Length: 484
Image 1 (cartoon, rainbow, N blue to C red):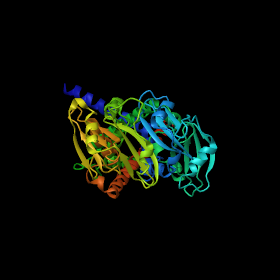
Image 2 (cartoon, helix red, strand yellow):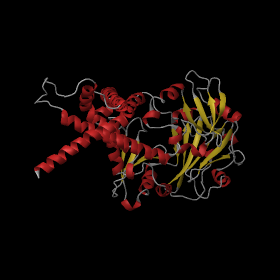
Image 3 (cartoon, rainbow, N blue to C red):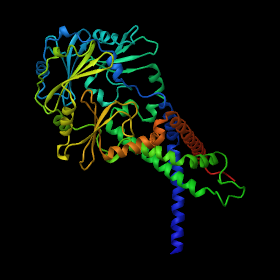
Image 4 (tube, helix red, strand yellow):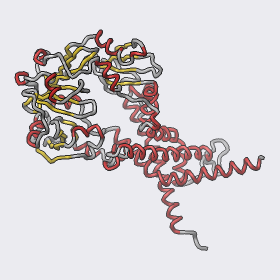
């Protein structure tokens, strides 16, 4: 029996070494790419249009030109029930209602005479872009259907785009929807250059692959899964081969020399972090749908609104005095009553028809079967709400089986986030392990970045040394057996 166990252990160890060797040859360059690109992402994020940038580019509302009520606009847009989103803003010099239906379809209706806006040409797109405060010498570059920066599905209702170069020193480009005239995205020269060394290789984000969301998700799951196996087997071997007490003949803790010694030592020093980075990256695409959705469902939103009919008993003219320079109004219902959030040029928001009791009533409708929620008002960031998010914020905590939380903007009534027990676990498994956003590191960004640099340097040393070792082995195999 002992001989069989010893033989099985020896065979298992041999397969462990062989498995790691070939997994390492397959994944070495990927590891090196991930660590290097992750460091770039510490400083340059993927292009996104922030709310402050979007609002800054909106012209002031021309109240005198608004002659169509929201009800008439919804009828002109063909809305059979109250839409997911309804806004009043300017399209260059014309006020328009922007309607987002529940299936994601976007429709634009003139607030002057009620005619549907079927699309915009390059000249109008150029005028829209010229309202951006960064515009110096704007010029139209051409039309874009899908490119590297607009590859994800959330841009589908707005495609195609007019691409406008603002002519500023930062090389800013705006994507103006040819369907609705909305500015969907801005990119700078710095973002466009550095993301080829950052997010694109890190997220495995080439356009042909990312455009097919299901295929991209499967690719990330399989690639990161194989890499996780390489990391785990390597760390296991590293532990088996290290000797801290009964050292090797020359007094060394490792039996290896040269590149192999670097690989062994760096892998041991940064092995736990390397495994944490890879496994948390694998979890980021939600394998097996273990983590719950972060957005409220359609049914939740309709209960929260308390009104599904395509009507709104609210006159935009009554909101004229809300702020001196209004740029947009967002209409919605809360607990069956109309609410209008008026966005002001200075970044403030004035909401008509909103109060604490109405918010509490509407929040209770999200999960009526769970009973009234406990509602906390957060004035400061905490472990589950931080990173520059909206403050203050309301947190509605329900006693349902999933212990669901909703975060609600008290200034507008907008539901910002849905977080159940699995979502809170994901916060630690991904944010905590992948970006070291945990404990005291969350509030000390310089210390967190320093630690990420150290661990990434160890990961790079492990990956580069492993790649050299693998390349040498492949060269020896290609050369064939040596002759005597």
